[in-house]
Length: 273
Ligand code: PAF
Image 1 (spheres, rainbow, N blue to C red):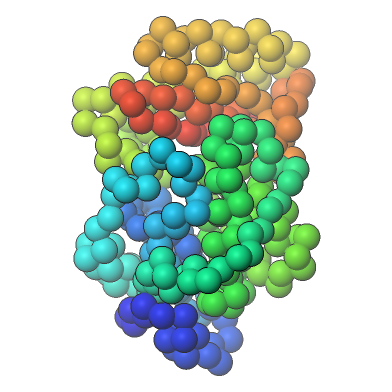
Image 2: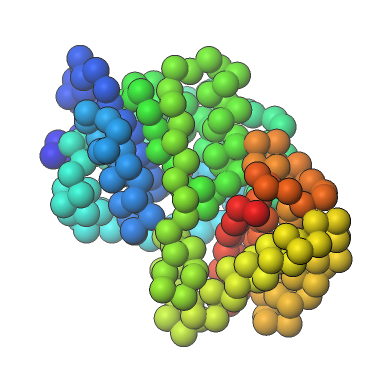
């Protein structure tokens, strides 16, 4: 496995490789990332992973400084899961003198976009830069960040990028909590309680399948349950995963999305209907 710190180095290592698959990450890797690497290895000749805590996707006051960083064990995990190349740039390497931002409208506007100003500009900009650096044929993202998937799908379409996006279903712990690097902030007993978020999504899904025309009251009930369980709910909604607009009545293809604060940590999750 080659570890590259500079853009020139990673370009040189990947030059002439015909079928590079790419897994962009912010490190603190877990089984969700491993699932992306495995899928990439199944479908591509070479697997490149980037590890870069991208400062431009954190709003002022967010957790940029305390975001978990554990490069050594991340590299071990990449190596043991068969990654061929890891790109590990510094902030300076990525952004020195940079004056350009990618802004995707449409699917970026509601939900995370409304609550975290500038977040999706940061994501789209860094992912486009990484795509130009790595030049993959396919790139792999976790569906846990559903809105990120929608924003990147729109960007790839609008900018005519010849890159196939693959979205991989969320990996959960034994209690159902969606794996996330930010779960590091929660103790194990709090994680167990936090898995109520997933149970709420499942209960809403069952109710919506029974009563597809009752979206409003089912969502309202789901919200109240979460509030009773101590969650500070930002949103719970039934959306189209491409436009990220709210939809009713319930039908297959839609997804239930949720964001809530629990013990000071903001959690997001979603499930397919
Ligand atoms: O999903 C993430 O970890 C990040 O948003 C990404 C896509 C690596 C961009 O920094």
